[in-house]
Length: 270
Ligand code: KIV
Image: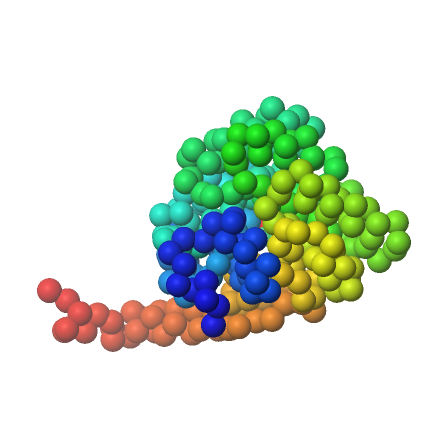
């Protein structure tokens, strides 16, 4: 059990302390009030309002379509359910690339309208100016390297990244850039464990992995780890429940009870 369970509010500073003290950071995604409340009560350190909402909440086949207003709706709902965890909000595709002033305006809108504690941005040196400008307004930024779902059309697949030396060197140098510009943590997604481990030992800020082996912390998409989604089955995913079956069985029982007039019974009416 982490000693940080006793901490009233997880801040970016606490996460950096956790790395120094070699305490692992547990992060999960959430997109709504009720789930966020359960995660927070269970003691999760960080809740990411991921743009994976585009997939698991809205049913799109990529993270590209979700809008800033959609993300703000999800993030504000999450924040209302959370007392202790740090809430980090993904900046959606098109709201921070190429124009640092637009990036700052998007990040300010997120912070003002949601009450979240930080934003997350995909990319390395290419988005460093946007990150610097957001940081200059006092908004903490989490980086994201390796598999970057917003770049799916550049790579064409969701397969493991950094399999060759050139891509591995680029990720290492980008991780240093993100560390040096002042990100408080980075996510490394779907890269070889040895590479992720090397990066985590080279940079000061916490490295949160997904499909990246043992680093300073881990993140999974909530609907995947709870077994609500079934179509997605990568090697790195551990399912901690099979909620699809539990939910479908409950709904089938309800349908049956309604059709057979078993529900509502005398005690369930006025
Ligand atoms: O959007 C998301 O859920 C993410 C995690 C997979 C890290 O970015």
